[in-house]
Length: 320
Image 1 (cartoon, rainbow, N blue to C red):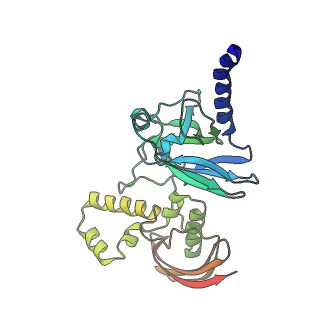
Image 2 (image 1 turned 90 degrees about the vertical axis):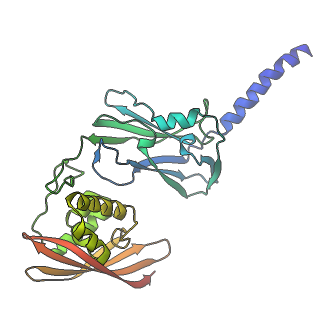
Image 3 (image 1 turned 60 degrees about the vertical axis):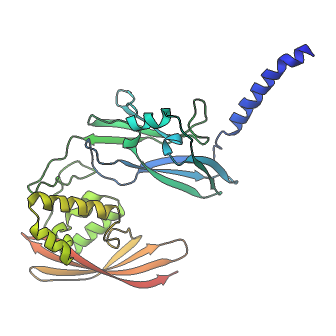
């Protein structure tokens, strides 16, 4: 009897360990990350959005806990090329060390389905030097604890450049994601300009998307904005350009021009020496149907460069 009593703590310990290991994620559950938008990242404080996706390839439902404060469900391991791990962000350290209740919800992912959410890498790590980094994400299915099972994601390569080079108008020059070279407008015809812009959006390359978009003319389409533009000084106009770009990328404005079509076809192109229009049939594929829209882009030529200054869109219904 005495020996049995001695075994009780040991058995209880085994039970706790067993329950912990029972929470281990199924190997059929995949955890992947990618950059939300392909772009040139600078050492400045612009956000670096990472999309986290959990795919359930098992035959049963997968459940895990997701904290309202994501720092209790997620972490990032980012290292230099010499394998030095970067310091955690001050905000992350504060949240994890202060006494508080952790609110969470249980996420259920059915077989064959996935669940995604987006986080800003800068909320997790302190990045103060430009350079090349290698990062992966860690997710805690049972919330962040000293001892816990952890999902590890794929690796991403992150290149952080020094501060962006300002152009003649004070707005940073656009850089090519693939080559790192400064993007320069080419004297291409209107239909190629429109195709270039839409393709850039399909590939989430915002630098290329904005290259042939006349932001000043796009801003000035509304009377109030045009009046504001005319009364602003040089610095105020630069701020309006920055604000427009940011709002368009976040789908706050011009939601029809920044949506991503599954396919598109140039239907008609008309232009003279200074003005042109390009009509595009765009298709947006959903689970059970495909939406059809017809876009008309209006372009103007200045210094032999065509740029988009306006657009209209008309819905054409759906097809199977």
